[in-house]
Length: 471
Image (cartoon, rainbow, N blue to C red; front, side):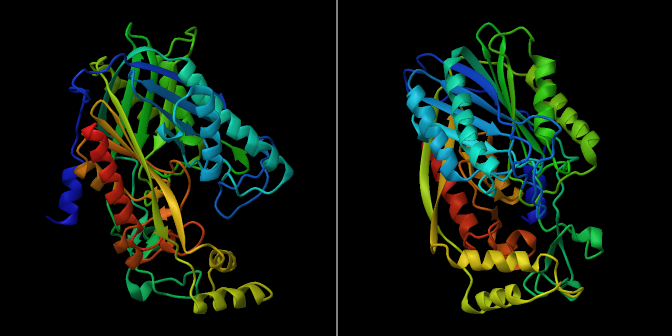
């Protein structure tokens, strides 16, 4: 079967509601759910590094950022999912937040999944070096822990359902296959790329380098009396727009506000919480078009989620399972030739000139920094089972091809992947995409894992999914 035929098969419309729950012969003792949201908006003047290569201070708050958490308990196993309106979050901060939450709740830290949405109008946590950043990061750590602890505190007898609906109009693969003879110069003074980000806009080609995933996955939990507790969505687009030097949760936040307005009761205590996570979006472009487009995209996806929710048949006999592991992977440190190139670039004075890439000096700086990294890194991978719904967690920006393959091969139907979960380790191109080259593969802080990282991560995640399916 061809790649295009396989992609078409995988994106056929599907509606999958909760079927028979998995678990031990005795069934769940008591299924409970709780949710909470905490404001994590940074102060004015802190670093707004989510806008790629346009570092600078926050000058305004367009809309607030939140950490939104869902806690589940089947009487034997507890787990929590917390999604933060941030560009990315490094593992050390997340590990610290989980440790605090674990101490407060008794839930193992290994049962907590915390991710970033990748809004580009929010900080890249760990990149800021100013005094306000040093104050904000401990505050953020505590607020993530608070959201999880509050969600656990709000646990109530519950029932759940889940499903998938395709929304194909927004995901577009941003990597374009190009004629090698037309290859532009890249930051390394080379013309070796055969794929280029948004190459179609530059007239370099028209064929996308890979598929997209149009599936909106939805998990709904409500009280046994029918009051909504939380709705978790998962969709795979990079982001919609940037807001200059203003903070914004992008369409992720607008989706949450729209779903809460449509499904929540203003006077309910604790309030209903909507959550939107990002999926396998590494090669899926931003939609663009300003905040009006944020509202359009967020509203369209929120409407689809609410309509899907109306078809659900919630059930109480839900069991849970969680598996976590560390995977050691190589780092693409520069060889002697690349390091010498980088030092030479940094020694140059003046502007690089029209025949040089504008990001040349940035990649030279990152090359020197990567040369000081250890040869390997350990990344955290997770798999969660909620009834017969599977959730994979990867601390990278996975490509749609990876997400589609995990959905196809997972023993749990449906399954979706949450990207940028439990840390940040850059883009996750497939080996084929590494051969094609392009921005997402250029060796730097945003793309540093070994060439074979994707198949190794995909295999490990599928093994975790098989383990939780058997529990």
